[in-house]
Length: 353
Ligand code: NAD
Ligand code: DAU
Image (cartoon, rainbow, N blue to C red; front, side, top):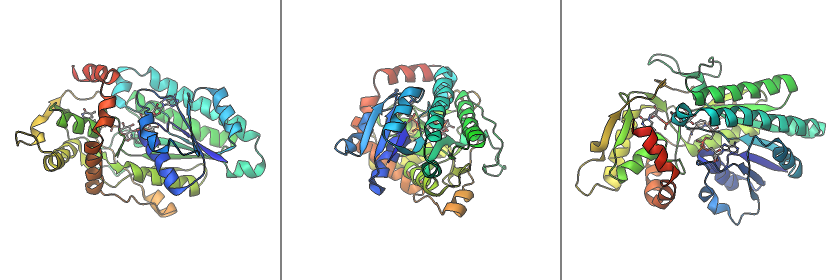
């Protein structure tokens, strides 16, 4: 038997697949459409691993999914595949609706068909884990308690609305068809292979290239940062022991304002790779127009996952962010391979206004 990972060439999916093989030898079928965000370079360490099978394809392709499920006797699916960048969803929501809603629906339909034909024992052992986000809960004020699993959904962007829709479909497939579903809602990740359109890798890349470090609005928006490998260990834990039909929040107990995150990155870079003129990278900070519908604060209450399944993050922000900066300094080729062509067009479009 094997597991099917969707979106396993993206940031979190590729970290998950790489980590999987440090813990298991169970085969992984890795299905990814290889959009601008998917990158086979992330998986180069697995090129000689016969337990890793990469398939280029779309989660919206019902026939392909059903074929993979049958052919590889899949016993679990972890669905990472999504359009994931809020700013892109504001410029053009269509792809988010297609992949995050229609794609999730088709994946669920193929799963339902496959699962219905399994033996009772295999049905009971089967799991579908849907990877979602804290953004579905909307925005917190400074004094609100952190998001718990029972918070109502109040998404603000086309991205978060499309993720909310997929979460609802997952819930409906459990309640209506009895499919053994699990959902995780995680806070902001950071770490290796993070696409440089997102705040942390964008700031590292721009700093090293003498470009402005764009801060939206006043920079006082708060995010709850989690090192990506801790997210992966949380997902593995929910997959092995989560209660069917439940959702689990995953977070780092680590709220920080965007400006504090960027200043931290600048001071680490000042130590690790100082500017030739001796000035701080923080001189490159530039305040720019705010994101429309920008959520003010996210914070995750991850006590359910801790109390039921004993999961805690290993990294603090201090240890995780240092590892991350080091990784980007050591892997500038990885970034440079991405930051050309289509990426440059996106940066022009997003930051010229
Ligand atoms: P990413 O954009 O880096 O990767 C997404 C991957 O999905 C890419 O490899 C892309 O090629 C693939 N993909 C896109 N559309 C597809 C389709 N139709 N069929 C098959 N593959 C497709 O995203 P990420 O940051 O790794 O996020 C992965 C998942 O985790 C997403 O569902 C996202 O909503 C969720 N999430 C992300 C974060 C975060 O901080 N990045 C936090 C919580 C939850
Ligand atoms: O909370 C989980 C979510 O985290 C995931 O669901 C999303 O897939 C992921 O992209 C991330 O969303 P954010 O919008 O929080 O991440 P991003 O890195 O785009 O932005 C982080 C914060 O930094 C946010 O408040 C916007 C701000 N920002 C971002 C960019 C790209 C800036 O101030 N300047 C920038 O140039």
